[in-house]
Image (cartoon, rainbow, N blue to C red):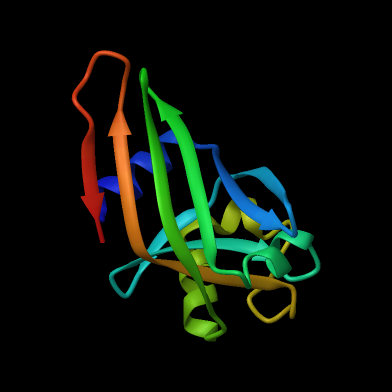
Amino acid sequence: MEEVLQYLKECKTFYLATCDGDQARVRPFGAVCQFEGKIYIITNNKKPVFDQMMNPKIEISGMNHGTWIRLQCEAVLDSRREARVAMMEEYGSALSRMYSVDDNLMEVFYLQNAKAVIQSLTSVKKEIMF
């Protein structure tokens, strides 16, 4: 899990895919942190992606230094204030322009049942489960 977390941080921008009925949706994300041994991401509960993530099966993809990651997982909503605080502690300077811990907009999800594949055109595929 640590390797996946570090990889996503180094990507700076990674892409999250959801399903919206019969249509795939992909959008850029950038904030990711570790809290209580889990990887967390953040969104706004007024955005369509929030509702789409209620169907917990998501995929994340990103590129870094000539390699890419594909991460299949489930997103689990964590409505605890402590989880939101952890995200703000990690990305406060960037997120504070959009959110506050108690604004009733900021939502965090942790990733579970995850399978990550990191590879390049010339490397052997590396699989990480967490």
